[in-house]
Image (tube, rainbow over all chains, first blue to last red; front, side, top):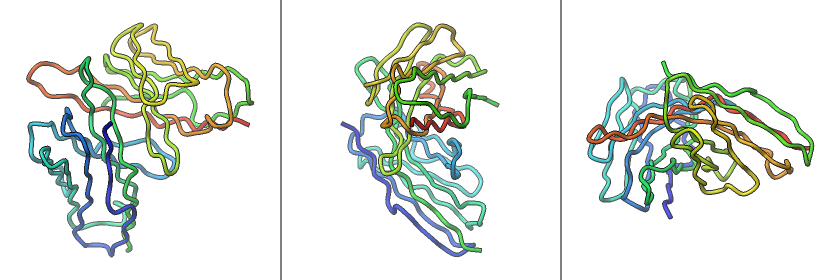
Length: 115
Length: 117
């Protein structure tokens, strides 16, 4: 059974710092890995999607990497801002006998950027 | 922009009631999903659907059923609501995977916070 773990569970850093969020998964048979942001009481906003054949994706100050063989992904946030404060979720698109399945999520990293 | 909408942001129901949660997407996506999110447990897949009238169980289908009569609409049904179904419910949609193109991302709605008393 696929399990996704995110470390750290919570992180508080001063504004302007570069930071790395970690995600690991137990089964490398995935279609893709997706990073989301969730603000309190809200739905999920997709940040980056990495296909299983890709190594990384970039969007603005965000860069996500994927090492499928070792079951790891990192989300790098450059020059953090208070507006980056949110919970960041990592999820892998599962493979089942009939093809693509739903997402398996980690429990998230709660990020606070101090002004 | 893809838009996934859910019929209610907040819902309060009594134990034993039949509850319908509605989800609509406007991008002609084949795949639709229902998840629930609970503190300490994260998001878990309840049911998903590849096409009209098609459904597949996710990780926690017990106590739930679904209906997909039209491509754009996917309903989650709690046949007899119980207090342990108090949760945040999130709907998502995506295109179907096509050969060589990789697997499309999932887009999420704003969520429905359901309280069962």
